[in-house]
Length: 233
Image 1 (cartoon, one colour):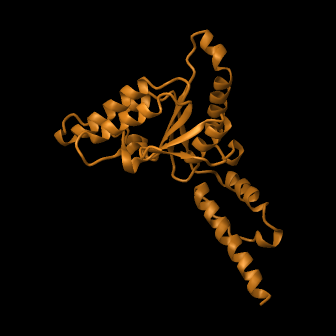
Image 2 (tube, rainbow, N blue to C red; image 1 turned 90 degrees about the vertical axis):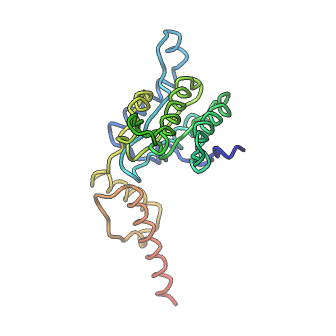
Image 3 (tube, helix red, strand yellow; image 1 turned 90 degrees about the horizontal axis):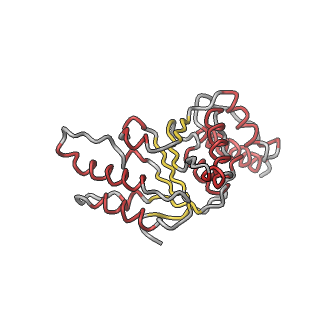
């Protein structure tokens, strides 16, 4: 396996991910396009295969990539940013070119997390920004030649830092927002339902991400189980 990426083998289903209404409808449209891509392409209609996920931390961006790969029965290739990004001049752009060359013949989902670390806005007035210009230019060329049989997904918490030319390359741009109290209550109910009733007592947090809510659930349920065991000692 290349050091430039690793294969994720998570078994996350689409119904494991909670989407806001806007994101849910766009993903549904994307999956329908993919299902009927052959007939759409017969009419020279473009089928979306580049998706940018942006917004709040912990609201399901990475889970979305895993769930889409699972749903489409495609290998999920996650870019190893630690290996891609190099301190050597020009090396990062070469690494990106090498990555795209390696996966060119794959039918897979290629996923860039923390995409803003690679695609930052090119500042043509800043001579120290020449490396970032090279990186962004390399990504632009490679995205333009990205194979139709694969899907490119990228996630960021800071879309404002990404070069606008890169953002435009993604046909779908999905914004992940903090869940409402009602959505969080549904999430709490669903997550807690797998545990016995006596272990479900907890203080529910609101105005938090799904990741923070999940941590609160795990912490509370574990504490309840441990306390029940201590009570019988």
